[in-house]
Image (tube, rainbow, N blue to C red; front, side, top):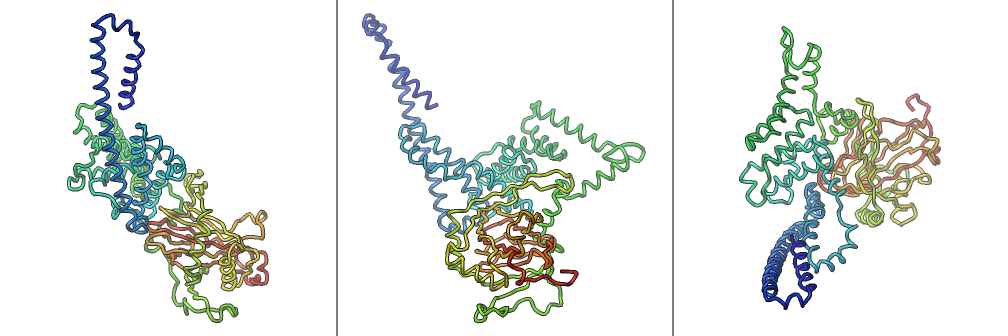
Length: 545
């Protein structure tokens, strides 16, 4: 609108200045007409000024809102960012609120200096892909920990009257951007609940009830939830009784439901053309969501371990003589300061070393890693039910590598690991430092490789995983086949062998990192290779070796 008004002003001036003077002064009527044009031009400029003032008031209001949100976040930054939905809202501000503010600024001449100043920052600010990733993290937390949208939003920095709006936006991202109707439904359902809760919705931000129900109806139909699709369509017809589209949709859903539940034969079996088909339908109804979505068995077990489901997490069985001890392993390096060893699991043997790394060393490692981190791995995972490869975000984190001799801290850590494990550090890989943020995770995997021919210095004989931070919620390390779950503890590390003594791979060591619910998870990895370990960990003679 403003651009149109500016164009009117410029075109009017251009038209006035290009008229030949001889044509104007020869007739008073023509000069009288100039006053009329000038009056219209003044009115157009006055309208432009009025809208410009209104625009500045809106810009000031938008800026004040962003200033308030920034202050709230910086009051206790660690606490604010530890909540996953606050992280989503922070990224969302740069994709929507800041872009909206910038658009209001762009249409003014003073915007040139602003655009010049922010151009260099643009590549360093969140992009649309960041918003998509943050939303994906929320859906991952839903799937893994069975959270509801309301529980995920609980405690986030937002006013109650905006909860419905934000919930709908997450659902809309799933619906339109990710084409994920499954995750869109619960978020839009929650938005609909809050929309109809007058104490929470208020008058600040209005949502269109019809728009929410329209999304819910089609999303439910797409997920083959016909009863829900029909119910949402009934509500739509109450709001828009003359809508032919809603009426046609209701008739179609009714047709599909009648076909699905049509009795057949004397037995009156429901849902099928035969008793066998009816039984199959009943079995399908009893299946849980993960069954219906053909979730890979490893992912199912991984999620159950992350949640800590009863009967899934296993513990050391009694009798055990002891699980915690001070150990020096006959190494002079550890005589005065022995290792604090805890046997967390037996088969495979997983050892937790407490207080293996100091706070000062941790900060040094983080400072080394921060300039070089960057990682998002996407792998293909074969679905055991369908047999098809499914693309999955296998690891969501930021990571970087640090060479052995890059720092005195690194050299000390390698020496310490050698003393604790008794293994040679000559064939170890560079230290990998990783940071898991919003919903950061690592799906079940092995550290070893089965293609030994292409592996330099042999296979990965053992792994040492350092925890460089505490994690408020989530972020546990789980061993899928063993059923072990280990909570991160700052300054500790876990150690396990990936190979048996005879060099064969130990498939009980499949492990993963659970999604971080709140907080930030920092870890460091050291992988030790086979070559050079022949006399440190010689082959055994037993069959089990």
